[in-house]
Length: 312
Image (tube, rainbow, N blue to C red; front, side, top):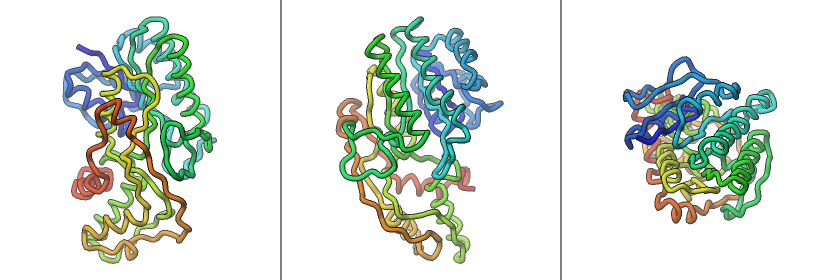
């Protein structure tokens, strides 16, 4: 039985990933900071261990004891728009960079054949995307979060060049599920639709609708992560849908599907719309033979209909 270690199992991506891994017949050890796993996985093949990734020695012990065949690093110090990373810089370095280094060092010393997946971010391309975006697009550390992700990508590349340790570094564009924290844009928008259907006078305050975004399903991304590890891919891949929305257009379409006028229920300041961008996912589709399947609109419909989502 394949032994899979998931770092960050209490979050959206980690919990979905653990479910998908268990479904393939793997034994899964999930690591998280909480006293108990946030999203229960009712399967004896799943084990939860409380571990703070800022404790590097505890992570070393975990690796030695569990002896994984593959490690999925989906843990991160990360927040929604406006999050101030300067206040958590030490923790961000520990979780986003140093814990990956410990995994790669374990592979170098003990398990050269270890397969590693690291969840990086589209933030490595900067905050003002425009035109075509692909793996040749320059990296820009525009915030402390993106700096940690760029550094981790370089770290993984070094260990592959120097020691043959293969890591899939996935540059993840926005991806959503019913488990996304309520402070993020998509849950806010779905909550506004759901509430407006019951209360015609309801208004939700948003920072802006003047932005472009490529959204996908988090579950689709985690299935792609598993495929990348199964084929032993080393290097970067872009995870995205290839479909770019203007925030305002997306809100208009989602509300209209429910017979609502978004402008009545959303309170957002008027800004000049920035240039658009398009993400090239052809290389990812070629390598994995897989691409996101669920549209963001269909996912939002499920989130609105599901009373057990984070919307409430």
